[in-house]
Length: 282
Image (cartoon, rainbow, N blue to C red; front, top):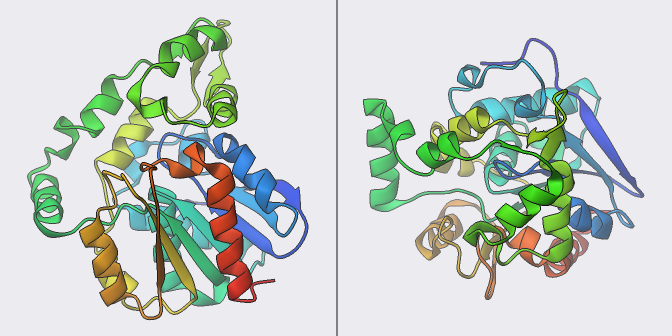
């Protein structure tokens, strides 16, 4: 379902062509501060303030990730932006790919970082669970719905979260940026998740209508990067990307997982800038 009004763009500054960064589910844009700072000398970075960052929005309004792509299109068009560099991670990577396939004039190039593109039995299973209406009952959606949402302080949150497997490979600065931006103070004096767990769960229990069909019409210069140890963007999906997307460039980042933009932001930034330089995206 489309938003009644365009979502706002947050301006991170920088010099050069506009670059939009779309973040992963559960990780607000501020978590990517270190990567953003690496991009700013060459690009003017903006991020959409997505629905889950807008108080009072209903997660059930999103039916598929195509709605997220539509929000991005609407936000860019509302600002009169065209020829934007689209960079996206995970969910954000898929939304950016879908938006570029639908409205190529809005993008001069796309970089998708470990996008959630499923294949084979896993794709069939996800579709089946969605048709049965029980996808929200299993991980990762069920885990997101049960996760702890409030802490007495940022320090307590950092202490509890640091040892979780999800964060063990994080760059130390990126972890601190998550604690700073991923938690929001409440009127009661404690801290809650900036992205409510109901929203995080909703994005885990939905997916694109047909990502592979959309990707066949992608016409802008595109780079897709897979974390070498990713348990989300599998080698089979990377191979299917090569067969599906005309002229796509694909790379793997060794010894990294799905969250590699937050594990190795410097190397991630270098890969992005090198690709954009090779396409003369300045």
